[in-house]
Length: 379
Image 1 (tube, rainbow, N blue to C red):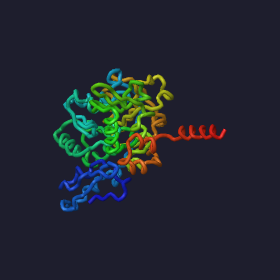
Image 2 (image 1 turned 120 degrees about the horizontal axis):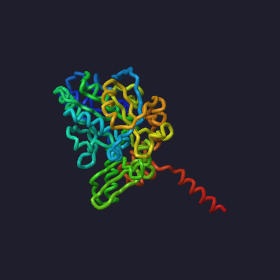
Image 3 (image 1 turned 30 degrees about the vertical axis):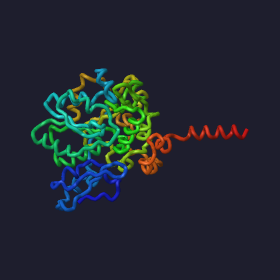
Image 4 (image 1 turned 180 degrees about the vertical axis):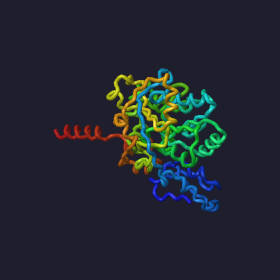
């Protein structure tokens, strides 16, 4: 049976839970809000399938030659409503037009993040834009396999660990399955996200009707986290919003994200999508601050799907080295913030703003002011 001795060795992909023939595995939240497998020994038959399909314990070696592009959607509305260049929606259209299904992350009624399956284009907005929270995959792999076995086309989108989790679970290739991952910074704790929503509710005194992590009202590079309410809105960019700061400063990520086994050049996904950070330095003609995507094609299937949207995009091929020059997260894990453990220790004890002021915000300015006051007093 599967046993997690070191939390770095579990990405929470849910493959073990989905593969268990006796439903003996459940995913249980730890004190930080991250899900880990727990085995019911009374139900376990020691088949060891959980260990055999764990993508961390059983690494897949891929030899391919990824091709990189900078591109964006010609449809400005679709582009502005997307996190970067609006490429995902075009890929999804191709699958939906075949009567297929698209799988990705969405919100539930309480703005928890979970994976879901859609087969109607009107629902595509549910999967658009980034969600900076670890998504609950639940039993989605089982449902995807059922659809594939019935001959349906599937576009499965997720983090690299979720893609490899699905691939391990399936155990074989499906011609009608397209895998699309992202260049992932790391996945934040669902518990921290819940605490932040509670904090916003207390501050704004109204329940949100929509949340967008990548609002472009102030441009693509200086994106906002935006809460829309019935009577007002809250909006702040990544240099000011507490949650975005905690995320980008690597305070609230999963243990495995600081030693990610899935950040690499050669991936099992067919297509990798990301923001093309630094495009203004490398390909200034493709930068207008409305969003530019980095697209990395890793398979013939990915190339075939990408070619079908050619008429709808502006693109330029680029070397892989230039493509990831400002996107180190493609191949490198982020560094654990020195205040992470203290942050989680106090998560339930003090308000979210005080927590972030103490363990997230840069104290350089505060120290500078303190030194200036000290000099003034001395003088």
